[in-house]
Image (tube, rainbow, N blue to C red; front, side, top):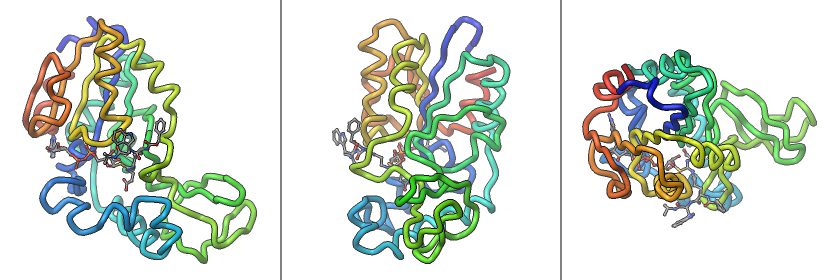
Length: 232
Ligand SMILES: CC(C)NC(=O)[C@H](Cc1c[nH]c2ccccc12)NC(=O)[C@H](CCCC/N=C(/NCCC(=O)O)S[C@H]1O[C@H](COP(=O)(O)OP(=O)(O)OC[C@H]2O[C@@H](n3cnc4c(N)ncnc43)[C@H](O)[C@@H]2O)[C@@H](O)[C@H]1O)NC(=O)OCc1ccccc1
């Protein structure tokens, strides 16, 4: 793909982008939702009901980040964004930091980040690498309990939607990488782009996603193999 041809590229990514780095996806066999019920670990109700279980779920995933590395797809997207400064908007549903460690400078984490926690009482967001528990005190206001993973749970409003929809309405290339297209509003972005009417749309995924019919071009296979060629 000759990037120069495109003025503004939006890349949406999901768990499949980080699968080859050793991070579980959600719905695949052996995925996170095999061993945990969404409603037990990724909803505000779950956190109210059993905060220790939810904190443990995210502490395990946060700690796992130290054992994994960006893969060739992360690095290729980092190169792309650096090479075409301001022309590439990286939107991710992923809460890991592998795009940044792969060289990306500006990543829109629409579902939050594992390496951040938020103090509910005072609203302050803190960079965080250790475990977070109900006893963890907010460095800003001293509150405990109150520090929760800075993650968007089901039923909660995703982050940065205004910036994302502005980019979707302005892009001339929309690429979706490693997402099954089951979770909204992210799963509706390609339809939004098709509605705007002039962007080329490409799906890169191991298998056809739930939204495959919306994409003009489909490349099915591993992101780590397809993305480096695609962006060169
Ligand atoms: C289940 C679904 C039906 N439910 C929803 O969509 C809900 C409700 C809803 C809203 N609108 C709707 C419309 C219709 C129906 C339902 C809804 N959505 C919400 O609650 C959202 C909030 C959703 C966010 C929840 N938090 C997450 N994550 C953080 C937590 C955490 O990480 O623990 S979602 C979480 O699951 C989703 C998982 O999807 P994928 O990333 O795609 O992963 P998956 O495993 O499914 O697929 C991986 C794919 O990769 C492929 N693959 C595997 N290996 C590779 C490989 N090597 N290479 C390439 N591809 C590969 C596989 O083949 C597979 O296809 C991601 O978004 C991920 O972030 N909030 C909201 O709607 O707020 C109100 C609102 C919003 C806007 C405007 C007004 C009001």
